[in-house]
Image (spheres, rainbow, N blue to C red):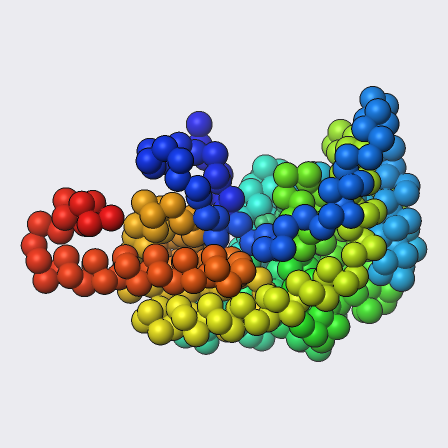
Amino acid sequence: MVKKIHGGDIYTDRGLPAGTVLLDFSANLNPLGMPQAVQDALCRDVRAYQSYPDPQCRELRRAVGQYHGIPAEWVVCGNGAADVIWRLVLNQKPRRALLPAPAFSEYADALESVDCAISYYDLPMAKQFVPDDGFLKALLPGIDICFFCNPNNPTGIAMESGWIHRLMARCRETGTLLVLDECFTDFLEEEERYSALPFLRDFPGTVILKAFTKMYAMAGIRLGYGICADERFVAGIQQTGQAWSVSTPAARCGIAALSQRDFVARTKRLIAQERAFLQAGLAACGLKVYDGRANYLFLKAPVLDLPQRLEQLGILIRSCGNYRGLDRSYCRVAVRDRADNIRLLEGIRRVLEIQTASKADEGSEEKWQNRL
Ligand SMILES: Cc1ncc(COP(=O)(O)O)c(C=O)c1O
C-alpha cells in the first residue's frame, strides 16, 4: 500500500527497545494538550452518542459563527480541515489549479483525485521561501482554484494581510477560487495582522480553512471548518460527501473549545517564548532555521538523515524530503514545552557530535549504532 506521509505517526513499529516513550515533534499540536473543558465535554452524557449526529452541524456552526462574528450560514464543518479540502475539491471538480511549493500535501492529493492539472509556483529558496509577487503573476485566467497556506506549512512563513488582500483581488480578477488555509493563524501573536477574515464579506470567491486540531490538540477527534461568504457555495460543500462527517463528540468538543479564550492566550505566550528558545538552540547546533511564526520551525540540517538518527533516540521529527523542491536535509519540528525542547536539542547535539566523530573515524555506521 502506498503510504501518505504526514507528521504524527506514532503507530508504526520502529523496532525501538521495549518501553521507549516516543517524543513526537513531527505533529504540530499544542504542547498544553487538550483543554480540560474539551475533555469534560467529550465525557459528559455519552449516551447521546447512541443517536446520529446533526448532519447540518447547526449548533456547532452557530458557535463558530458567534466566535468569529459571522453568520452561521458561512460555515461548513468537516472531519478535520483535510475533509473540508477534499469535499470542496470534489464539489468543484476544478480543471486547473495553482499551488505554491512547498505546501501541505493534501491540496495536491485532493486535486489529483479529480484529475485536476496542477501548476506549481516554487517559493524562492534564495529568498527564504517567502512568497513574492511572482506568485500573483502566476495566477492566470483559466486557473480554477488556488490554495495558499498562511502561515505556510512546512516553512512557517506568515504573510501580512495586505499582501493576502492583493492575492484575493488577483483571484477575483482571474475568476479563481482561493482557498486560504489559516489552520495555524491561531498561534500567531498578532493574528489580526495576518488573517483575511475581515475581508471575507467582500470576497465571496475566497474560502478560509480552520482546524480545531492544532490549537486544542484534538487531532484524534477530527474537526475543522471552512468559512465563505457565498452561502450557496457553502451549502454545496455541506451536501458533498457522506452525510455525517462530524460526529456528536467532535461537535461537542468544538463548542467547548471555542469558549477557551484564556487557554488560547496562554498558548500564544508559551509558543512565542519556546519558539525563540528552540530557534536559538537549533541555530547554536549549526542548523539553518527559517523565520517561522507558527508553532513549528522549518530547518535545514547539515546531515541528510537527522530524522532517522533522532528516531533511534525515540524522537520523531518531520522529514520534508517528500515535499516538492526540498531534499532530505529539510525538516520541520514542532515547538513543545521547555523540557521536551531541551530533549530535542540534546538529541540533535548528540547526533551531530557522533556524526562528526564518525567522519573522522572510518567504519562509522556500526560504531554509531553502538554509541546510541
Ligand atoms: C496546513 C494544514 N492544513 C490542514 C491540515 C489538516 O488539518 P486536520 O488535521 O484538521 O484535518 C493540516 C494538518 O496537518 C495542515 O498542516
